[in-house]
Image (cartoon, rainbow, N blue to C red; front, side):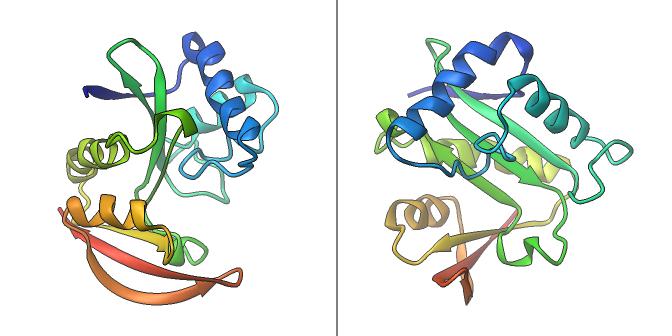
Length: 171
């Protein structure tokens, strides 16, 4: 299993739309780590927003600087998405620095663990010292992904009626 993280581009539009549609077809309306790709109708609008959000001078006033990456396999298929929020504001303190999703047909293959592993040096190169990740308590797969990448339990909290935990990864 070899994947690489690539920034969204216009050339990935068709694949990205199929990626998103697979979640919807699986009755999953939220794509974690997608910087609202699940809520944006037009790929071009989403691409413009995620590109702007990579720079402190162009980031949306309601966001923090964020890098978003597709995880692409050896055949060029988008298997996942992951984002890196460089700082945490009041809203993000319980959501963490990073979110990720693996497309339904590609789960249980280790992609999430590898995506997070590949993101860690990117975060370190951005000057970050640690990553905070939130996870719902019943999401065993994501907890394993975080722990395999060095995550240590920090604290518990409740978000929108769901019990969740924050893990910290030292970079």
